Each structure stands twice: as structure tokens, then as C-alpha cells.
Length: 124
Image 1 (cartoon, one colour):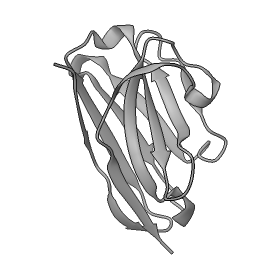
Image 2 (cartoon, rainbow, N blue to C red; image 1 turned 180 degrees about the horizontal axis):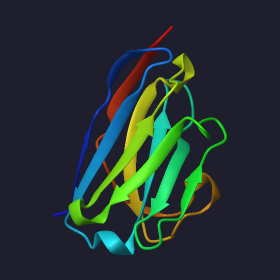
Image 3 (cartoon, rainbow, N blue to C red; image 1 turned 90 degrees about the vertical axis):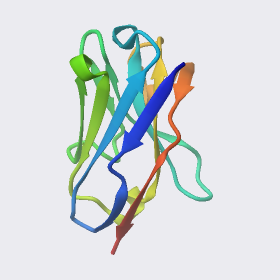
């Protein structure tokens, strides 16, 4: 059974930091790229960052470049998203997902598995 356990969301003041974790099980982690997406109320889902578990290639949306860092611990089948200098506009539900399409600009592709999401709220 495929399972994602997302954690690390919460409430933080603008300028603060959070680290999201996405622990995956039930599939061959090394065969997939993992993406972090977010969706704010009334807005479309946005690909924030994604990483290839096989070669470490990454993508960052322009809105988070220089502030967020994605990393992967293949031994733990876990992907992290370190979020620094958070802004109120980063407020959203953050989801991790897995694709065999590799790392593509915008983290586009067919994502086979999705986590349940974790809320990130940044107060001004």
C-alpha cells in the first residue's frame, strides 16, 4: 500500500522558517521524482519544487527560488522542503506527490501518488 506521511506544517510569522517532511512507502522510491505542491483557497494548485530521487535534479518555482530548499534522503525514503523567509503569500496546504515523469519545469507530469497535505500558515 502506497503511503505518504507529511509533517512539519504549522503557523509561523513572516520571516520565519518551517521544514516539511514527506515520508513515502509502498513503492520503489528511487524510481520516482517527488514534488511539493501547494494550493491556497481560491487559487490553482502550484508546483513549488520537485526532486529526482535517482539523480538529485531539482526544480524551484520562481516564487520560492532562493528561499526554499528541497532535499531527499533515499535511505529513509523521505523528501524535505526547508522553507525560509516565509511570506504570507506562502500560506497554503502543501502536498507531496510522486511521479515517474522525472523533474520537469513547473513539476508538471503525471503524478501517481499524493499525500494528504499539511497546512502552512504565515502571519504578517
